[in-house]
Length: 132
Ligand code: HEC
Image (cartoon, rainbow, N blue to C red; front, side):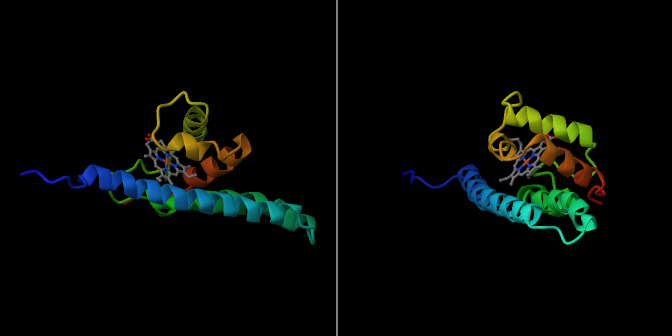
């Protein structure tokens, strides 16, 4: 007699869904915090110019749950982002965002980011070494 059990695939999809919800929250929080930093009166012009790189890396860390810390992965579950050329990254993300590239998850993720956000993250990931 067959009993209905969760298949490994169903469990994997569920796990990814939970990871995605958590990551979306982290992404929104990171962007909200970054915006507070951006709108707070800057003590010096130097502080203001330092905001962009910090913001890009903060946004990029929200991808770690699926793509590895700094986009570096030791296995093949997800495409590693570390070392991806910035132009390729930005195009891929815009294609996800506009629905030109099929995706289960990344369309939702990509909708959270402006072109400027993507350029910043693209530069961040391009500067990371690939997984060893
Ligand atoms: C919950 C898991 C998850 C999170 C979080 C996530 N991704 Fe993804 N990513 C995926 C999956 C799954 C794919 C494969 C396409 C699809 O089905 O959506 C993918 C594919 C990609 C690709 C295409 C890689 C290639 O060359 O095929 C890029 C680029 C990418 N993600 C960037 C990001 C960035 C940037 C973030 C953070 C802002 C992020 N992802 C967060 C799951 C995730």
